[in-house]
Image 1 (cartoon, one colour):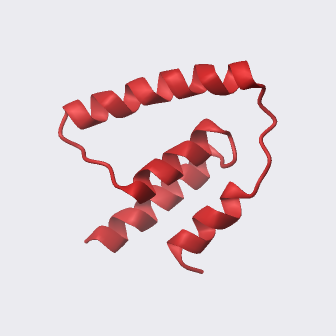
Image 2 (cartoon, one colour):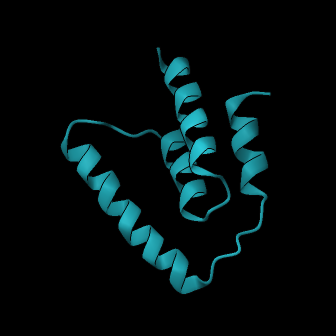
Image 3 (cartoon, rainbow, N blue to C red):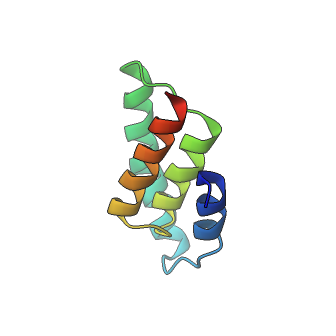
Length: 76
C-alpha cells in the first residue's frame, strides 16, 4: 500500500473529538508546525495531510511517526 493510500484510508476514520477539542488541538499543533518551519523544516502537502490526521485523532502518535518516517524515505 502506498503512503497516499494509507493516508486516504486513515482519513476515512471518524473522529471522537468535539469541535472545541479539534479547534484546541489545531491551535496547539499549528503552533508546533510554525515553530518547525521557523527552525527550517519545510512541509509538503503530504506532511500537512499526515499532521491533520493527528489533529483529528484519526491516527495514534505511533502511526504519525511511522507515516512521517515513510514520507522521509520517499523524499530521499
